[in-house]
Image 1 (tube, rainbow, N blue to C red):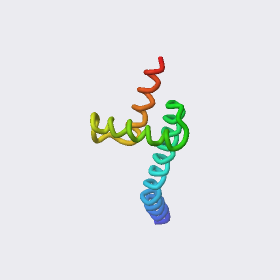
Image 2: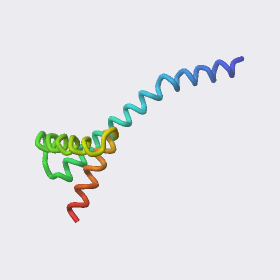
Image 3: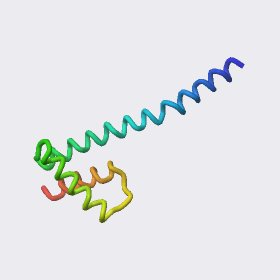
Length: 84
């Protein structure tokens, strides 16, 4: 009986907190990718953010229904390819 209660408590905690952990990880990943984009663009601050948003909107037209992470990784890949 005690083991069942412990397993049940674990499952409840997992179901409640796992989505929060996933969301936090995704937010941190997006922030890191945006910073990488700004460094690759060599544009600090607001001008870098505006350029990233414009680039992302163009990609959304060409490749709809992708994740934020996918668009940012695509921008970084395109920028790195164009620098070679």
